[in-house]
Image (cartoon, helix red, strand yellow):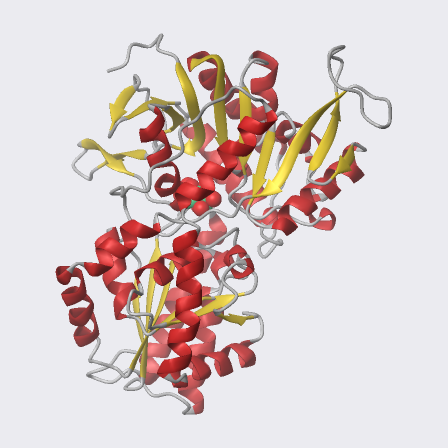
Length: 500
Ligand code: G6P
């Protein structure tokens, strides 16, 4: 166990730790690797840098001393049950999440939730400030912690601060709804580098800063006025600190997915899955957290209509839908689950036969090995998000298809669509268009499938998560020279394969 006065040169701060405290039904507790693309993305960088990770263990009212897990120092931050409800379920996931995803669901604004958000952000900032060595680097992750950069700068002006937003940053017209919009922008501007998934997210942010705070921006920089006499002078004659706001599209550890896909036992499992489904001609797959941003209902509607129209039968095609449980105490998520399960029941009730289901629905997370087998078993991957920061599932599907086969149907509203241009891009709101695209995917000749998948694979394999973190850390180093962070080697990690 590291002693509590230990200091680290590289500290990652995120709402969730890479390990979750899990309490079993019999009351026994254990540590488990927590799901999510973020963990997969950052674990190798941490291991290469002997860094520390500050975050919440996923359960209320538990205090833990720091400990080491798989070469990473874990520094838990406790949250009370009330804070989980107000800061995590409330402000993070019932205010910011729907607001930042194009208000697909209506955001709820509560002042007590905001107060809890401020209080918890301060606790994360204090803990990170305590354990970071003089002149070190702190990398803050995601929308749950947008106030942390400014709070850190106030306590530790010596450290270099990065922030990465894993979800979309909304257009000004939507962001302006937020009663605490200025505080959020100022919080983020405490960072030296603010990373986004898409170029559009970075420009939405710069525009919000110009309009709501009046700061000058010269893309990709934002000029934040400061009191510091030694600061450089801007063209407007003000002392400023320059903040870089730019897109750094996140990726996956593609090589580890390829390795799993090459394993004979996993390939055998893929065949077994197809047999278990009654060997339909086409297996279609959806893999998502059960979230209203993912367009799961739209996808099921399109498939249900294709069956109703007689363009498909259950012998022709089965849809496998993995919907991993998520944020289950938030009302919108409870309603969504009911709607999806009603739809699955209806479609299966109407069209399934004794030997073939229409929708094979699974409300579980699965280990990564099983996910790879599912990807290999699927002729068509359906990513129909109404809005998504990136969507790593799309990249995982591509990475495992060493056979250059399989068709990726991808929503143009997922960040991944900016890079994966050779996918079949769809507007998930256009159900008629989605139905036609699904039929084209089913009927696509092998040669076309190969051409598209080759191009997709080149993109994903050349731009893996190690490259993502290295380019972000390089940008941090350029802003404040002298910081040396070792980029992640292209190694494999063993984490849960649940979708982000
Ligand atoms: C998204 C967010 C992550 C989050 C993950 C799982 O990918 O960007 O910050 O950790 O969803 O959600 P949860 O609420 O379970 O942490």
